[in-house]
Length: 131
Image 1 (cartoon, rainbow, N blue to C red):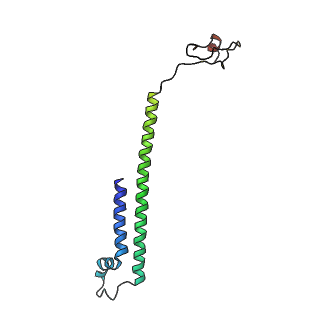
Image 2 (cartoon, rainbow, N blue to C red):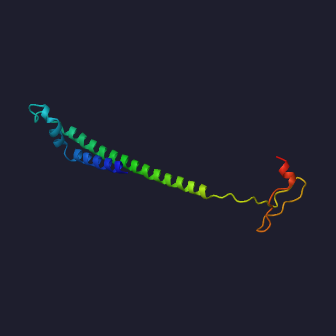
């Protein structure tokens, strides 16, 4: 989450500078190239495009930061779910077999229904022999 916040802060600061002072940016970065910078200063349209670019930089920085934060949050939620699944698998104990009245032996005899004291320990001999 740290890099996302850093990207958002830097992007908003740079974009705000572009929106607030496009002329100052030009004078700080480009005016040194010209012998008479006042004569070569960009037009008002150029400054307006710099302002639009600043707004674009702000929007991109905020969207990118939000996506990175969202990704971090979903990743941590996924890790939490994985840990819960591992804990559930580790805690799972296979219950003993319990045969209900729905089961019928090959001979047609019903297996006793499952009840607290009425659990059949193993299948009839005919069922064990047949795969």
